[in-house]
Image 1 (cartoon, rainbow, N blue to C red):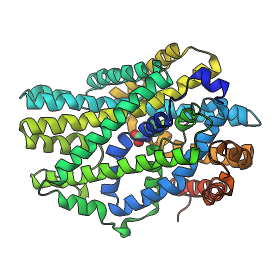
Image 2: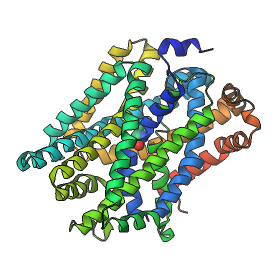
Image 3: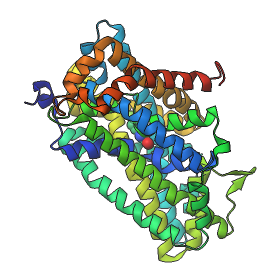
Length: 452
Ligand code: PFF
């Protein structure tokens, strides 16, 4: 029987609806942009292996924990911790999650705006309007950043206003299959071009000498960011999940889809870089492969312009459409967290909450549009530190305050005898000890508080 709070707040129409929405939250700029560039600058295949270990051994148990907390309470993160916790301190975990979500959304919107501006850049360039193309692609232009951030936030708000099944589920059911299709087509094109194969080798051949504590920190931070963990998005999406769904199964599907898209994006980006090099475009800077925004917004557009003709426009604009779609399915999950908080805790109607909160966050995005240097600072505080910290708090809360025995009761509603299975027993050990210790150790290590 659906829990009554869930019904009143909205819920997913199907298991696929949840899986695609959660995978949509997970698959984002983090997969298509951040993962390949991190892998490129951190030993290629070695980073890939560490990353996959972080996703499945650390991310997956935390994802199960978050879905379980969300579904049990049928509430937003603040309400969920308040309900399951024994004192008001516990609600702070939810508040921290909401703060991280708001701050991540504020800078994510600016970057997402760049991805749309580059769709225009590709089209203008192809039409010979190169003056416009270079104007549109100027990511240091505050007014332009502001304009595209506004456009992106309006798109995000309009989907969230539609509600869980009519807004989020409908949008992600359309966007996610399209995203997969486009990604596969682009990979097919790039890897068939002569000159791209060196990129495949760099990506797939591990250089284990590159594994350092910093690399492991980067891989874990990337896994948390990419799986949308530690900030309540998955708790919120889990709160709309029907009680008879099998949580371990859906968590595995979401983790697997996210890791798959990251892996596929590496198959696109690294060969594309070496293809660019074969076409005379510099891909190294100071002996390092170019990464980050310079890779996405300079190296790749130069490659697309070099292809030229109709094919060049199609590949270039479709690549940036792919990035925009991936970003949109993530921004909606980021906005849904504070919106669900406003609906549950302050009884504000969804449409009004989406509008007020979305526009409020947009104000921060507008400041960032003119001071893009803030992106690095926000990213460090709220995603690289904030999300692993949120993950530790979720595990410690579940294991020592709410207790795994209660979590198992919730898990067994959709997966009979889960606590007796190997996965169930290992999950308990991971949530109680392994995940919090490994994440904490890694976090302190990276902050330089002690060294490995
Ligand atoms: N997972 C998204 C990405 O990889 O781009 C970013 C993100 C979305 C992080 C939602 C956190 C979140 F709650």
